[in-house]
Image (cartoon, rainbow, N blue to C red; front, top):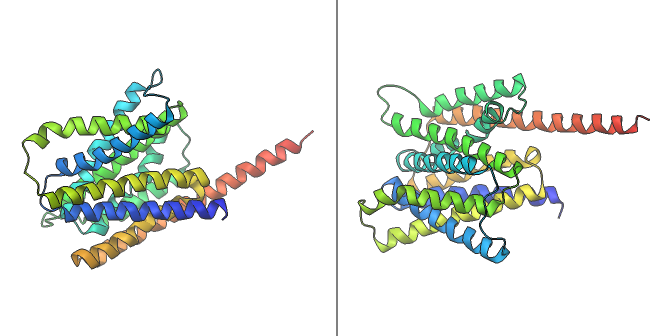
Length: 298
C-alpha cells in the first residue's frame, strides 16, 4: 500500500477513535469532567509507561524543555476538561467541531510563540473558521448551550496551544512517550483532589470510562502512525472525518440531530480547513520546485 494511503487510513482511524472516545464520555453519564479526564489519562499513562520501559531509554527530560512540558500539560489538561464538559452538554457533532478548531489555533500560536512565518491568507482562513464557529456556538443570551459551547471553543484554543508546545518539544528532541507520560501524570495529579470528593461511580461507568481511555489511546497511536507515513500537509484534512463519525454516533446512540445553523458552521469550518490544506500543499510544492531549480544552477 502506498505510504500516503496508509497515512490516510491511520488518520481516519484516529478520527473514528476520538469520535468513540467522545461517545463513551457521554455514555458514562452524569459524572464531573474531572473524573472522566482522570480515567482518560490513566490509560494513556499506563501505555506510555510500558513503551518507555520497553525502550529501555528511561524517563529523561532534555535540558531547557521542562517549562514547555508544563505548558503542554497545563493547556492539554484544561483543553480536555473543556472538551468533556462540551461533550456532556452539547450535540456530539457540535462538541467535536469546536474542538477541531485546534489546528487553526496551532498555526496562530506557532506564529505568536514559535515565531514561525504565517502568510496573510492563513490568518484570513483562521478568521473564517472563527466566523464558522459562531454559527455553531450561536451566542445569544437565551441560548442555554452558550456556556458549554464557549467552553468547547476555549478547549479548541487550549488544544491548539498544547499542540504548539508538542511541536516545540519535538523540535527540541523530546521523545513522544516522554511527553505523553509527563502530560498524563500531570493531568491525573491535578484532578486527583477533586476526584476524591466527587460522585461515586458504578462498575458500569468505570468500564465505559476505561473504554473512553482505550479509544483515546488508540486515537493517539493512530495519528502518530499517520504522520509517520505521510506529512501533515497531505493528510491532515482527513482528520475532519471525525465530524461525520460524531454526527452518526450522536444520531444512532443519542438521537441527536444538529440544527441548520450548526450545519452551516460545519460547512464554513470544513471549507476553511480544505482551503488551508490546498494552500499548504501548493506552498510545499513550490518550495520543492524552487529548491530543485536552485540545485541545478551551476
